[in-house]
Length: 102
Image 1 (cartoon, rainbow, N blue to C red):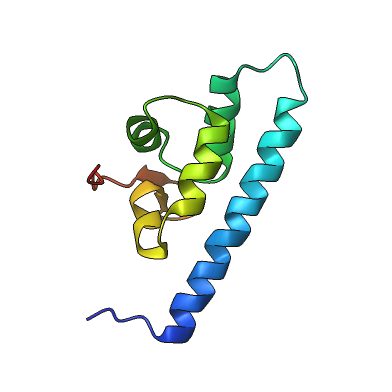
Image 2: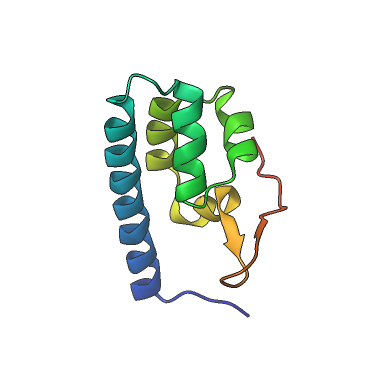
C-alpha cells in the first residue's frame, strides 16, 4: 500500500503551490515576448514543467496559459498527478496515460 503521511501531504501541497508560482512567473515572462502566441506559451510552460499538454487542453478547452494558472492552482494535491508527465529516467519520459475525469 502507498499511504502518504500528513507531513508528506503537506510537503506535496507546498511543492505544488511552489510549482504554480514558478509557472505563473514563467508565463508572465514569456508573455512579455510579443512574438509568442498564447498557445506557444502554453506549450512551452507545459513542456518545461512536465505537464501533460493534451490532458490540460482537454480539461481547459483551450491552450490559454492564464487559464492554466487558475486551473492548476485549484487542483487538490492528489489530482495534480493526473496532469503531469512521468519521468522514467534522465534519457526518457512518458506521458501519464491515466485520463483524468472531467
